[in-house]
Structure formats: structure tokens, C-alpha cells
Image 1 (cartoon, rainbow, N blue to C red):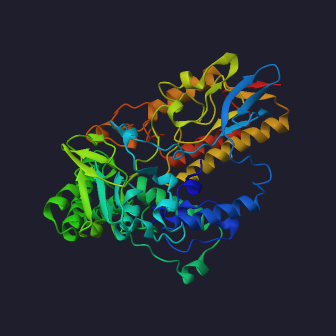
Image 2: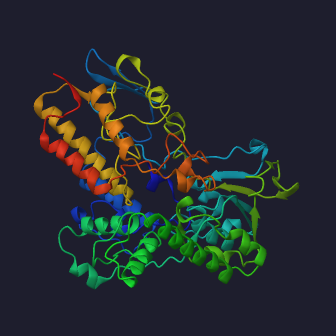
Image 3: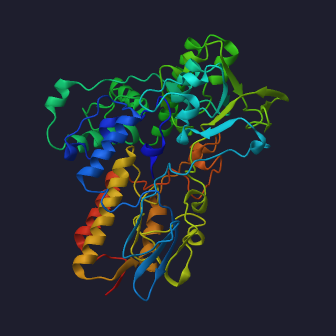
Length: 506
């Protein structure tokens, strides 16, 4: 999807533990320099991966797929591109990523603005000055800049903009919960102590600490904002002398811990931001996972600078309008030279909006956009009936993991097994039968995590497609029995060997 290619804005780091997040660390004999690695270092690492596995040799860069159509007569996908190609593909893996299509707000008069505009995922260093690896934004010294959005991107870019521009307006609809970023450097002694399998063990530990329950006596290896609530619950359990937290008490006790964590984060704002009105507007007023939790040490202090103004648009749910000279808020026009959109990506909107393909048509011309209009229907979140030899990756009806790259990697492993078996056994095409798919979908919904009671009180976010409680592509729709249970189920299906629930064309 290009997440670590396109995103080059100043301050860019991963906000998950890099020792979990970066894939194939043991295979590559590589270790990140710190817990939250810089964006350019992640890019460099992915280049190393691509070279090691010869991914450049057969890559078509600067090429956009336009249509994908299944041709039953030759059992191939016909794929067209914006360069006039028609490619016949036996297998297609849809690996476009979840953060690949920039999202822009619908603002009245947006296109009348005569100043500079760009999205953070297409940062214009020619305009701002500096460059990716050395973001000295010296061309902004005489510029009035507005940045729209206060999510994971904005909280990293704002300190740099505040440092260099004449005046910065930070336009906020919903405040983020911003914790301290304890970005620990790589410990050489820890690195020497690592033994084979360390990354998978660390990922498993993080999954339990952040999304499930640590095993008795197990320590949290990552220790960041994602694991705080579970750590507090575990400390309470030990203090109470309990062997386990009773399941009927768990939701209420977790809600109490959620409140305590959010109170700590709200108090952090008041301790740092000097102006009481600004501090109050910056306080997160919701539960912990309503909006992606983030961390940064320079974001809140930026609001103590005379050249930084917070524009809180919560009451109007966004800007009222843009004009030739700037933007309008509460009837007042603010003149600016540049508008930067830190408005994120199309994550949970419709497939057609997220994917750049004009059409994806399977057997008998069935459109995937129509077939999945009300949400995905799959086998294992990997394949769909009527779409032979096509494999999906993403938040699609499968197991959920706190480390996205691990989740996607296991999806890739499952797809690779099916492809390799099809080739080895001489199968022309494989796809779920209607019955096999229905059986899995019904089982998935039987065990699906129901988080509606949590998110119905949340402000709009990309988790819920901007406030749709029952959004078809709600991000956290996952296998409710846990990550390990889902992986065990899929592995058992592979071990059985018959590709149960699949139609096989020979």
C-alpha cells in the first residue's frame, strides 16, 4: 500500500513497538535503533527486504491497476493498468494496505482557496523547505500555516511546524489522547541476549498484554500506552489476592481502569498546557480506544508558543468554509498561506472509495463491490465465493492482532499455502463453495466480538467510518475467541489437507 513510501512528513515515526511491528527481523538479522523507529529508517529497512528477496526484479512501479476480470475460459484474471497493459494472472493477492488512499474532508469552498494545499502523505518539502531525513522547514518562516486534523500524523508534525512557521493554526475536531513517548534506544546487552524465535515471543507477549490477558507470572515486555489498562488490571488482581478476575466482573473493572488511564492523560494536558481554555479543549473526553491512542513529547508544549493557535471546531463538526484567502470558523475568516490536511486515510469506508480499481469482477461477472456492499463474506477472511484464485489481506473477517504486520503476514502465509498446494496438485482454480463460505461466516458471526456498546458512545473516527456504529467495515470486527484460537483453527484446516469448503477446478 505504500504507507512507508508515501508518508515522509516531519517527525514521522511508528507509534507501535518497532521490535514487534517491523517484519522479518530475525530473517534479516536486523534490529531497530529504538522502540519507535523513524519513518526513513523503516523505509530503508523495507528496501533491504525487497533487495534480499529480489522483489524489485518483477515489480511494475508507477503503475495503477484499473480493472480485474475473471476469464473462465482460460481460468485466469485479466488485469488492465493505466499504462495500457493487459496482464493474465493465475493468482491475484489484494495487498493494497489499509492506509493507502488519502482522505480529504468535504469543506465548502475548498477549491476556491488560492494558497498552497497538500496532504501529509504527500508532503511538499519544495514548499516547506528541508527534506525527509532533515526536516528544517526554513521556507515557512514568513508563512501562516493551518494543519487540519489532530490524530497520529498531526501530533508528530505539529512540533516541527510550530518551530519554523510564522504562525500555525491547529484545526481540531476531536482531541487525541497523547501520552509521553518513552522512546528507549536499543539496549546492546538486551540485543546480545536474544535467542531464536525472540520476535514471535515478543509479539505474542504484546498481544496478550494489549488485547488479551498475560499468563501467570508473565511480564509485559513492551510497556507502553497500549498495555497500561491490562497491566493495571493485573496489578489489581494480585493486590486482591485473586487467582483470576471473574468474567462477570471484567467489563466493569476494565471500565474503571479505562477511566483512570484517561484521567491520567487528561491531567497530563493540564500539567503541560498553560492556557486553561486551550488545555480544556485538548483534553480527550472519551474512553480509551474511541480514538487511536498516541504518544509524543513535543505536541502539547507547542501550544505554549505565541505563534500557535488551536482552532476547536467540535461544535460545528468541522470547518465552516474555505475562502480564497483562508478558512472560516465561527463566522471569522483566518487568512493563511498554506493548508495541510492531516486528515488520514480511507480505512473503513466502502471498498470502491478505498480501492483505486474501477472494477473487480469475478465468476459470471459478479462485482466484488456489489458482493461486499454490506461487508465481507469470506472463508477465513482470505478468499470469497465467485472470486477464484483471489486472496485478500486486511481487516477482513479474521483474527485481530495488536501487531498489524504480524496479522497481515499470517494472512499471507495462509494464502501462500493455498497457492502452493494448488500448483503442486495441478489445480487450475480454487475458491470457497457457497456452503463452505456460509458455514465459516455463520461461525464467525457466532463468535464475533461485539464492541457496539463501547463505540456507540465514541466520537466519530476512522474506526467506525466517522460514527457509523454498525459500519459494514468497522475496523475491529474480529474472531472473538482470540488470535491464537483463530490461528489454530486455520492451521488445523491446512493440516487436514483436503481444502474443506473449497471448490477445486482441475
